[in-house]
Image 1 (cartoon, one colour):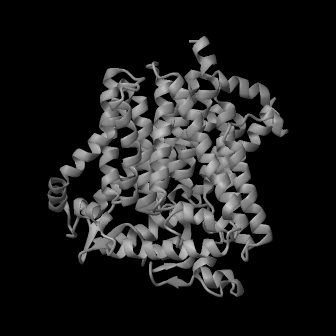
Image 2 (tube, rainbow, N blue to C red):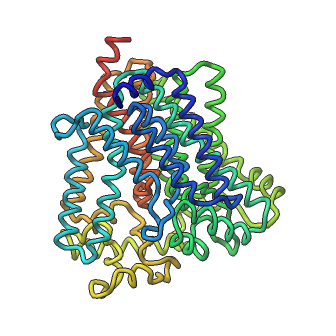
Image 3 (cartoon, rainbow, N blue to C red):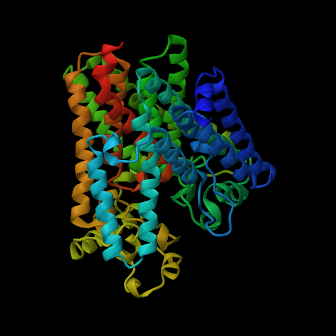
Length: 526
């Protein structure tokens, strides 16, 4: 009976309309809960509706709906786990439905990409260290389950995409999902203009942040967050949207810029104009995020595209991917005028100066830079003394002497005076040092092999098809540029482990990997 119903639904021409209606309802309901005081029990209603869709509809359509639902994934209201987001239940639900529907109960029946084995090694090493060496095993297991939970969506995606048409459609849905977050970022920006800064701060933390990330993080955000930076005695505006911080929001803009640029190759001229407008707004949002790590990291993909253009390697393609960076450079140059315009709109006056913030990157005595260097030194020394690692989710042990003898909750909630944050929210401010401390030398090698495998796999494809002016080739190129950008930015932060950033990252390289593995088949049927 269920199979017959699925077949009927598969042929319904209005199934896409149902996906859109579900998305619009989620937007309205989340807005109602955040702004109008609607009951949080609506979260359970939304979760139930989405789970029903997963069970009754084809896996591919369910995948599209969940991707569009990422911006509306708020915390499930419950008394035991006050920071459990909807997506964790939904991703596991989709994975379970896919397993049953496609009968993929054996590993050998599941398709993987070449780099997945290194991810398995990395998580396996991290899990072994959690079980054998970590002082706080429960926290380590939570981190492992988190990674596997996100990975579940990725596995369904790379096993579900079967045609060029599906790939193109899914990419459009991802772009829309990213666009929703960026648009909400501008709504948040306007909110800072229309009210007193302190009123906005308390309101956003008590309502939107609490809805999305739970009570614990909302309480932290009330006294310490990265929504605004402080330099020269003034407060500088930063855009962060529904993300927990401006750093993770800048990664959303980064991924949107890369994917959106590739999409301009495959759409009609009139749609392309709207898409380039969106790319400009994403570039402006990236600047307004005030995230220096992503600004510096931009050098890696820009130099790669510039070198390809100079050496006449896929010049037509390199030129297209240089434009987003040129747009960002132009916006930086125009930032004094942007600052003046923003100042006229504000109710609560505060300073914004993106050029001076960019210049502070090279000032090693600047407060944030100095603190980061000290953290790097401490982390590097700890890694030298503990080459085998301490276990995933146990980084806080590295900067808390005597922490092995303490209760985790006491230690995690202890305020670190350098960052005015609970110890559980402090990181190494470098993905590489964080990985080295938590998973040791062997975990770091597995992690490095993952990235190397991704770069080599994508690069071989691009080099082989260097004369093709095909959207699928363009998409693989943007995935490689995204990887270079993230790797460069990761020298300064660990934002790739934010849940939404990790989702979009895995979706991006998952689609690129499917294109590479099936490209010959697509050519034969085109």
